[in-house]
Image (cartoon, rainbow, N blue to C red):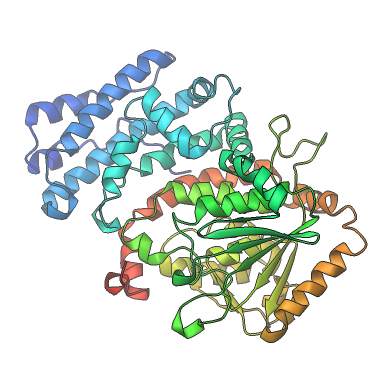
Length: 472
């Protein structure tokens, strides 16, 4: 976690705020009113909320970010920093009481994307409202103040708390309401077609297909809900014993007519500000974790020894490449089949973000040195290489992928998938129990929030992706 700021920090904050032309009386009283947390939850809500409201009013006085002078931008950054230090103080003192209030004493499972807005209603100013987030979503990433960082601060403190964090992880592993609404259709027809994802039963296997052909099967706000629904349905289908993840055929002229596994986060959408911070949290605590852990039941914690989640082995079929988020999926799979010409990358250095849970999982496959080279220095891992085969179980010529996939499915199911769920669960409990994931994702929630709004991200996208000249 980042160091907790105190009210004794920024002793010289007054002058930068005054240099930006902010009213002297308001600045002086606001800085003098920096609150410390007490044992009184309700009183602190009132005190801190008043402080955050005054800070928001000060922040609204200069022009919006693109039109600010240097002095105004320094003042804005300082107001945000002081306000966020107060949020940390409040949460350190009250996170469990707050979470209990939001979940009716742990009785209700509330997903992260709703929890942050429920928190905004209960404690005004702690996190942004939906309207405030939507307002910033209208701007390119470089022109945002990053109000969603406050969501990251909140979620990181919730996840840091053992009981509250485990409860939130549990909530994110439950089937989505939309998935349950489509389940009867899937069970009856054996397939569900959506715009960016599909799930289909073929014999003893459930096939999940990522469909975003214009973007080389990149992931963004258009894909996340439908992919999670498809993964839910694949896990929930009682008539199949394994699940398959594959990318669809794409439209890009360079790869026209070929399948692509996944090209990671949609960098053009990211640059233009169309991917919200919560996308990262929803993805890694939802669909990615559901492949790794299965779909949870309300009555059992995901690591409860009295009964497992609803889960099955997952196979990835990697055509062409698995970039970024695509490679992250491979680290959750039980079997990876890849084409000889396919490759994997985790271009976190060129993007300026954290590659999901790869920092936690990749060292288990390739060791710490290669993992650091891949994540921090952009090392490419060809599937048909010694390092690539540490992740890929089988590598075949591209023309043989369909036949090889059929053979793998038949080999895994012809005699029944004996104890598969039990064995994958035993591996998981030894390698990555839920509590380890919770502690990792607590750090990730905060750090990714700051990365998402970092000037370095914009510079990286312009340098390595030519994002400013790509059509949105």
